Length: 325
Image 1 (cartoon, rainbow, N blue to C red):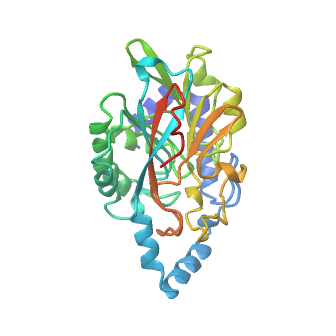
Image 2 (image 1 turned 90 degrees about the vertical axis):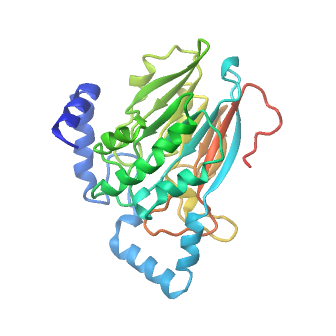
């Protein structure tokens, strides 16, 4: 990020927000302690990751774990939103989370190829674009240039939107936006069709940096307007419900990434109830979906937890097909 990018972010977000974000990032370099809902992170301890990689290699399952991590599934999830305007009935939103694009060469193109035969009106990226939590952005930028234009070609109706995750410094914003993904930093955007509006609200990371802010984006939204929340982790669910959100789209957990044969995740990696760490859920009438993620972190391997892109199909009425498939 050059001086001009920093000036634009300062003008856009203000000194208070940008100062808090940069201060939290400096703290984040310590790897283990942050400002948000998160605490200890095993993937930030190099010796643990080395031991895990060694275990996968000597056990002979490393290659199998890699194949699993590349077995990207595309699922559809029908979501009933009674306040959805009729003009937006059936809108399809592709949800990608935890891409960790520099974790495997060509991953951006692999995702684009997997989605080539699918249709959607908008795409949302809910954070974590690089494999490690520090380092350069060159490889991430290269993979984004292969992926985002492909997403935009599908999502011509409403476009591609992104938020930041706990792996993402504020310097990721110009990388995302140069690739064509509008990044929401405690901001809202209106998806409009025939004078009907659905609001997307994108908050900054709650898990590590703690720089999310509900009040700022909601000031410009009518009180009863339908709204969807994009936030990296499933850790502010009660707050989101209290602010009137009807749909909460998130990720961060990878669904466990390395699970037991029954799909149980030994590590849920989020301060929330276990029922919120993967798939569809509800809370006080608010619908939610926690993505199992596209990529992998720590080690590029998955077991009993395939990566996924979810296409959420929004409808005003329950047609009896609300389960993910």
